[in-house]
Image (cartoon, rainbow, N blue to C red):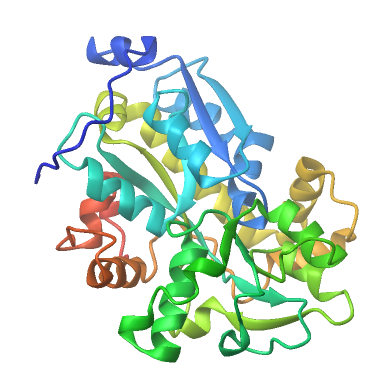
Length: 336
């Protein structure tokens, strides 16, 4: 692997010490964020799928902890500090971390894709009907400026609208805000936020309010479906804990199978996990089974992010293949 000149700091966690001695860890921590894209992890938690597959693979009594964080930055900090083992972020987040860490003891890779789902850019400013109408008076909420999947999608849309040299044209309008808070801001119209690049179910909530409308869909920018979330981890953890990593992969794959086979049951899991009150079970089931959603561990069009980010200089090293950024479990899949 190519090496990057980067200093990330080394944290000697007990779990990593045991791994170095050839023993599987006895506890793993998984981190998710807000919204329907994290449904597979909710299903994994509800049905104890990691524990199930760990026992099958010879790791009995594995303790599994799930935590919800509000943004990409805190998730990355938790991963690099050793406070978590697996977390879900967008492909641009994976690309940025892989670019900085490949070849080091803190090399970040993805275990697998989590799903493919669109983002919707929602606006409450009556003067805004497309990204061309956005001005300095508008603020666009994204999970993390510049590095989140939404922020990069916005750059790609700006490139498509105004040309390659204008890719960062909308960056000054973006602010970091978790999806729940951004939804409150858009609906209440009390804060400076006038647009939100949202995931499900938040854009569905927002679109029920008169005067609020969709002005952009991420799939239109990409020309089709694209992976939304990936499960990231440290390569060193996977190398030292092969059975545990395989159990998490198998659990994620089973969770996606369950969602595809029974969207209504999956919707009930989501409602229970999030204390959903805005929609009834049938409405949430329709969100889950939306044809735009692909519940799969196989990466879809993930290299389109990398090619764009490399072209504009936010990623220095372009992998030869998407497989360079993924663990062996996913490399065998027909991804892109």
